[in-house]
Amino acid sequence: MISLRKIEKYYTNKLLKTFVLRNINLEVEEGSFISIMGPSGSGKSTLLNIIGMLDTPSDGEYYFFDEAVHKMTERKLSDLHKHYIGFVFQQYHLIDELTVYENLETPLLYQKIRVNERKGKVAEVLDRFNMVAKKDLFPNQLSGGQQQLVAVARAIIAEPKLILADEPTGNLHSDQGREIMDLLKKLNEQGTTIIQVTHSKENAAYGQKIIKLFDGWIESDKKEEVVSLKN
Image (cartoon, rainbow, N blue to C red; front, top):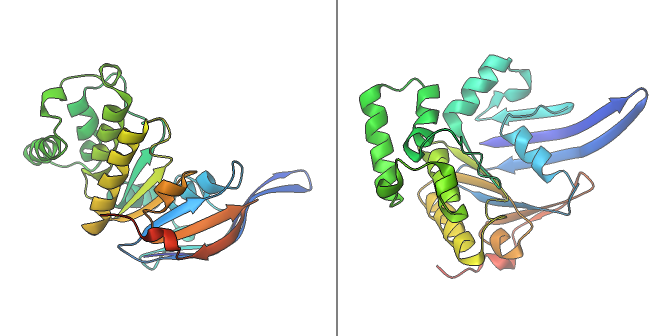
């Protein structure tokens, strides 16, 4: 599904290069669940943003379903991002001026889905996430856990092939965080590919593989015994 070959990200100041990512080689199979770990400043979020086509590498090759992402125009990148990728952020990134219903509808508007189909998809997701009673509320009227549920629902409403989660439980208490992680695990079991960035070993254990970054390098890339989670 995803192939990263010798990906590097750096910023140039005169003759000095400051590296964020160095020589990243990574293969992601469709239907997998991958966790990315590492200390602050190790390049985790930058790597996730490159995979999500929100940022571009300085060097290297990126293939998404065998298409050369590193050669694509901005328009093609935007189309691919809108139709294949859902994002879940630590800070939720809901639109404050829109209701829950309108926040959920937004990705479908970007895809120019017809009104009746949009209504059906939003109704289905509201029911699935037990949020029908909250559809007319604004984000500031919801708890942190409820806002993150809306963010996850918004990420999956367009049925993306890939969900990228950047510290998805970072602002939640443990029970809410577990609920979000169990939801991501269920989505993965239903066939959605998940890549998450996390500081939490407990959350990382939901992944079938853990990628450890340090100073922009992949320090290790292996399956871990921590995958033995209770169902």
